[in-house]
Image (cartoon, rainbow, N blue to C red; front, side, top):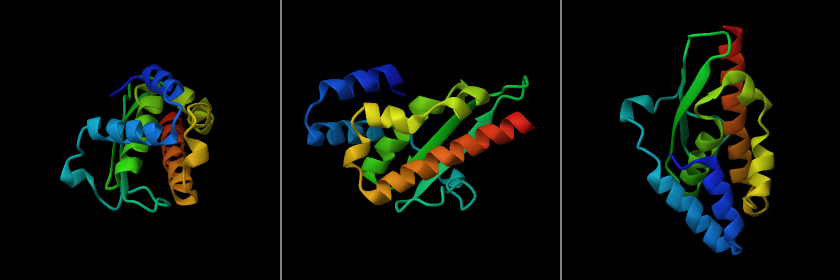
Length: 140
């Protein structure tokens, strides 16, 4: 997975919207494929126009578990957005996930303003799902 700091730096370097979208697609191509049996109705993210699946893994070692995520999409740009979302949240304590403003990060990368309304809604749905998973992990 590409580190978040590298994604932010690369987006800052790319002035042209088409170059940024090409980069987002490239990030999606680097995303490991999700095993077919994990693509179920339970792992599908509701509210996305494209198909998006998200699997959460939580360490049960302490009161603030570390969450890691697997994600996949059937659309190139959305797959890249999934890769960025995973870079933001995966490997973080649940309490940090709840506090993280991912939409602000996407805005600072210059990606929000060019997303269609459907993609922006799908992005919000992914983020909500991850934050809900973090809240559940903290409550367990």
